[in-house]
Image 1: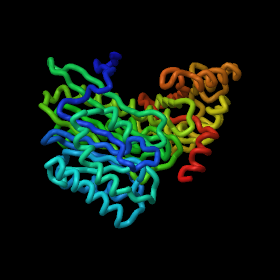
Image 2: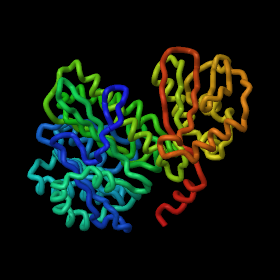
Image 3: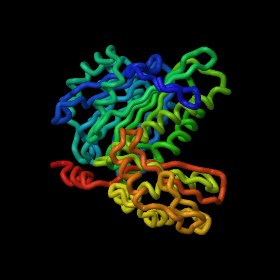
Image 4: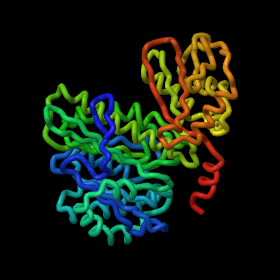
Length: 412
């Protein structure tokens, strides 16, 4: 286990998970690849759920149904069914019917209320779910809950992802072990206006709905809402967090918040690094801002710039693109007091060009392009506005020829 600054520890055992929760993932024939494509999360009774979803007006019906059920039940949700292969978005009445049919079957198999079941879908837009394959395999999926594999669930929600994305952390609060787990998918169409593509978090501490909503919202703002792969918002974006268990003294809720933040930021960085065709993670820190929101907006504008991303891919220290992207963020700042760094190399000092060796900066970027995954492959850009005390970070990736290849042949 790796110790974190906040006394949370990463759990190296991939099958450690919050108490009371069960996970499953199987291959149900929804993908031509025959890989796992159907997952299920089962939460204990009286679990509390919060969800944040895509802000696009073109939304999959399952997104609307999730929002409705969370609101109607005041967050009392027991199960989440997740399929990959078909987004089931822009499929008209079929989309609604398939979602309702699938969640009803799950509820009957689990012996719970249909309104306690959510469904999330991911895959190609405009393609209905292969509903017969899904329904026929639901009994196998429910049986697989006995295996209780977080790994299988994490694999079953992937599409073009190159790696699965999951994390479990733990800490002790007044002698009690507390665990938080999360898993996610996302590689393309990443520019969330609420959360991420699909991500799920479970925590074995009981937290009231109103407080839980706030905690989830805070974590999302500085994680899933601070990443960009290609500037595209999906029809199915969803982040759902569920808590269940004995409550703790409210004075420890800040510690739970730090744990949620760690899990969400870890998954968000994994998504950005696993961007389609990406070779590195781009991490942009904006400090000296008037407030955190301004800092994140500027950082995100830089991460989302195609010109910055292609320059990173080409290991070109074209700092003008960075400044231009910051200027397009909609946040006011003064160029003549700004400091800019690429790695440890200071490019601008109080708005004026600093003496630096462009070959060394290019080599720094080149080294990161070939570095160890999520360890030595992070290109860092720091912008100090020198106008305040707040800071914010956003994450992205380089933009390569491979991204164009993947997305020019996505359905063919």
